[in-house]
Amino acid sequence: MNRFDFTPYRRSTVGFDRLFDLLENASRAGGGDNYPPFNIERRGDDAFRITLAVAGFKPADLDITAQQNLLVIQGRKGEEPQEGQFLHVGIAQRGFERRFELADFVRVENANLEDGLLVIDLVREVPDAMKPKKVSIGTQKSLSVVDAAPHSEAA
Image (cartoon, rainbow, N blue to C red):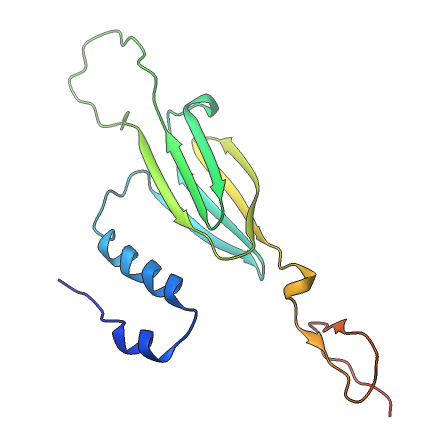
């Protein structure tokens, strides 16, 4: 059993409990079901895409729930009468539930089902109140949001 002990890190850090819990839960659930297969793609600094292979599922069979820091995707196949006698069934017809832990301020932008692929676009939107602010020394000026690109000020 591969288990990493986070105790020394927990003793010397403050506020990272959620991260350590996430890592421990992921290591416990790592050997689980791999259905349906999926990709996670970074599409920019603050844009991500999750693609799930859900062949045979219709939009009505899929349920996507976004909660704070959690994305849950469920698929449920309705009982359809099957004609004929199957000699081999290799196409999965079972339901599934796939969970993705999301970072703070990540939200679902949209979801599309096309050609058997469920594509979910995610975007990270940090509120202005959480962005770094430039603090002026010795003045009564208000704080201003720091730009991502460095700029020079004339003295």
